[in-house]
Length: 464
Image 1 (cartoon, one colour):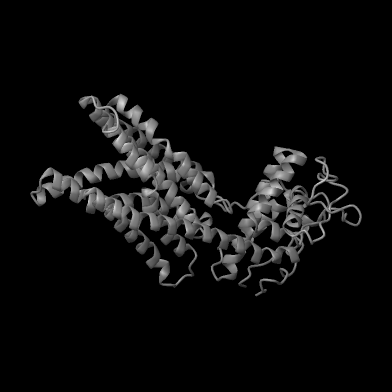
Image 2 (cartoon, rainbow, N blue to C red):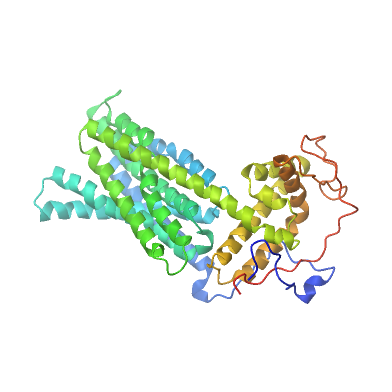
């Protein structure tokens, strides 16, 4: 088994890859054979149909309870915090962004399927409490909000995290992925729930002809949109943290099974405390808000940012192996493990060659990041079943973008460490930058024209 700093063993390049005319399409990727019932198009179509049907039903329910005008007002007000919350989760997820399909599914599941199931199940639970314990409607609603709703809602939202963990395991690698998926799901759930609450409040104001500060709409908007837009993402984020710990654990470790269960139980507990405190006096509610919710929110943000730093450290640790094998230049791991350098490289490519090259550099960075995580899992004893094929696929994509991406990444690395000589090619797409002198440019040209050599050998399974 090679060490982390040793070059990959032996070339494993097919004979046809050594021919000068060899060039596979840049979008080529490894495709295992699948049965008809495993067709991605069939499964995607069924899922989209199911979520769309849930969305139509939930809108019909909300319209029935709030009226058309209440639905429109609730929709206009509930959408306000959504861009802020989604932007925060996308910022946390910048190192290895989740595929947009995963994020769309998570949001749609929370906004449509999870909300529909929760509304129906919460109504049934409240009715059951009222009939079983002969409670008054007020008591049944309070008990349902404190005990039944947390269990139902956190289970519905956590199902999206579980599904992506099971069926999109390649894109679920740690705590950051868990927090992002859980947060996006909860944002969708809170969006639809806020439409219902705000629309209902607007309907009450219309009946009472209430205006100004005492109005129910304004009070509901302040409580749910201004004061606590993070509530649902915070609760479900605990479930995401649990699945993230599970994803980063080896087989056989107890925390692999205990972490998701513990995160789910913690999410329900926090949700129950939040709902229970809202039925108490104003002082008790504000005390729970200041002493429990805000500190936990700060802790969750700190954990997500720290986990992102660990992801950058993983890139810096495992990419030098590929640099020693000839796939990367020695300075690229330094640039790829810095968000500032990655952003600078894309900016340089956009200024020098345009948006298309900036996109190629972004794709190169994504493939390199996935490659580092792939090897890290293998070295840590958690190899992917298709390690060799996946490694070949990622290296292939990087090889087709190398000529565009490597020069700007080298320059970005030199910007981070100005003492490092930064070579600049006299030929190629970035020869003599057209945007003029740069404070980060050091004239150390490569010795002679740069010729693209055949593929270097990619490694075998690190654990073999």
